[in-house]
Image 1 (cartoon, rainbow, N blue to C red):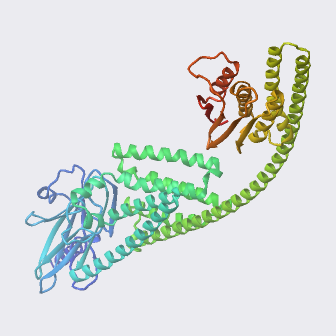
Image 2 (cartoon, helix red, strand yellow):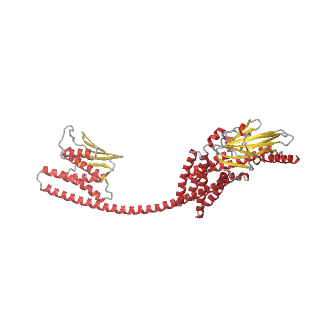
Image 3 (cartoon, one colour):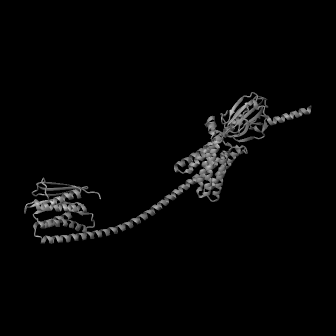
Length: 613
């Protein structure tokens, strides 16, 4: 009988050690899961009243992971005993902030005590879901904890804390996370500012990649649901967890391609671009078909590919590859360890709780240093480009100066040749006109008819008006313009010598330079006007004055021929060839206006505007 009692006592003690937990009164954290029991509800339908009849199995592990979104509910049975003579208050902490739903039940009353997880507010406003526990002196309580996760990872871990120690630990934990996020935010905003300054797309890739990492980490560490979003908003965002993981990985890939200048490795560039397309398609595929257990796999594969490509670039003496490699070591290790922790294989964060933050911060700083080096490289390239441009400008200026000098010399030779040709042409024309005039004079001498002689004299004077112009042009270097006074003086002298009207004085007033083409027309007009005045305006042997004036204001020219002779009736139409020639030249050649007034003598007025060539 005594042996039976001993065996029964040992069995009870063993059962208590396996499935019952005595609450410690010291400040040490108590890991509860090795002393708890577990039941998997594959039907996801069992409630608290039915679950108590199920057989729970021992766990023996400090933390157990079930991967992403398992299709079952996990029930944990805890038996807590207060061995002391006083009431004890503790904090029960569930050590994973990403579990979607938690419910803590009292086994005796079957009442729901607290809710937790992403879909419920934390009871004690902590990062991890927490539940207050109170036990009276020598009281034993049994609790059931229900956990499931439809989108996120399901990792179960339970700890029991003294209230003061828990808040001290929580304050320290949140302070370190605040420092981490603050440092990351400052680095990201600094590089965003640089992007707006230099407009280099690699800075934008950096900012988007690490902004995505920070956004993901806010949910991974539970700060998003604690401080920024309501439980419903948090669940709404977590549904897109596939993209929250994929987007920063995507932009990190673009960042790496740009920094390594992967175009210099065509095969690797093509391979990475192809996988990036496959990665995008698979990410969308995982989201549409709720393949949450695969959503991080493609990101991890992409990180491994990037690590391998960076290693290849490093071996081929790529300038940027060294720092990128160090960054990828940090990121790949943290990403891989986070993935292993999520699927429940290995949890390094039990030993190094801030390893992820440290790795991310190191990677951010390393990549920021790479960007700073890139900025330095861009500045050097800019300086080099400016120097090349300055040298090019100097060379181009010398080339253009030499070309201008060469072209100027050629033009000067051409102009000289042209001047010689024109002078020769003018000389030949002048000689030809003189020959014609000589023939006319011979004909005048042989002609006895006085009217015919006068007609031939008029023709001679008209031809000589052109001859005088060519004489002046031949004597000058500039054949475009001619001095009107010199030209008109020759015409007047020739007319007076021909008609022998010494008693008539012809006055000339002008200081205008005329274009050679216009001068020809003006010469004809003066020849006809003066000839008519000498022959018809005065009586035989009567003295008189003919005044010729040419002035200009800007491009407007005024030519007047005035005599103080007897005048004529301008209302009567005269069949004078001279007047017809004057009117035709003034109107159609000079494109001007002609007016004739005859009161005390005759006044002929012509105005025209010089046209642009």
